[in-house]
Length: 410
Image (cartoon, rainbow, N blue to C red; front, side):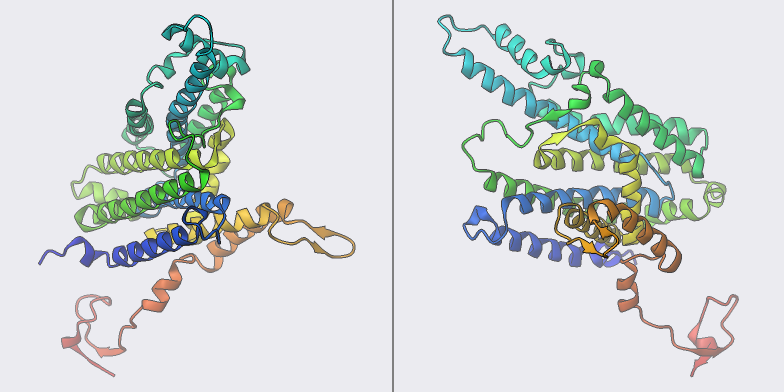
């Protein structure tokens, strides 16, 4: 009898219930509702954390379930941020320029407003013309479409070239890292069309909502991030369950055997790689308006390495483990590097966590890998595990059969 999605993945209801209660609780305690027990800046931090949890789930699917250690998924995250950031910066700057020119004795033409907008945006890199990549920046609808298309097309082309050549293992990881590094170095150039090292700024100012306080805008993005995380969890629970999930995990465990059974391994890997890239782009599009700025450093390979560390600490191969790892490490990172953790004076030396946080993170990763490979999420497996009764007798054709009718319980 074919089981439904919720029957195969009971964690979906538990996760959605926990996410809903968490979202409701933060909303009630936020400044937007008047209670003010949680500051607007912390609401933004939590909203960004939810976006990081979403890309962590995507990373877990491509690595923990499909066995592809991608060190480039944060590039897709950044591309999504740049795509929405272009519209945010264009629309906001255009409104400011139009307002300033409205007082002129002669009303400005549409072209004059566009030229002045280009000067304001690209003057920092010595230019005033809109590059071709900004062709759709005037349209929110088209830029939202770019949030999906840019990461999806890059992943589709890269994955098709890599998987058809049957590049696997560490070589594929190096290729994804090289792709990320190349993209990052390109964006650092002033003539890349995205303001080089300056990046895109002022993204927290949403066009058309200038009169709305940041407390309300932050809670709206927090809700949007929670909704995206919930939908992403359900989507990937579906992808990793049933026949498709079995094939994907089979590719992780023994790609050659799955290919021998007649499955087109490359198509499955390409599908997983592409859909996780698209979801990563969506996560980035929600993250950077809350962060307020994006620059090429956000796409550096080290960011994708951090992402792999989050998933490993949380427990790869478990969707909820990826969420736990991303939330735990990112919030802990904000606490240590934001001055929340007090310095520890030792007399001869003072431990300042801003400097020691990365070392602590690295040691945690090594410790989890060596002594607790299931990660934090593995604790749930331990707590909910039902022990198999001890049996003696004939267990059937193999030791794992444990057929009760062929033995007797002790």
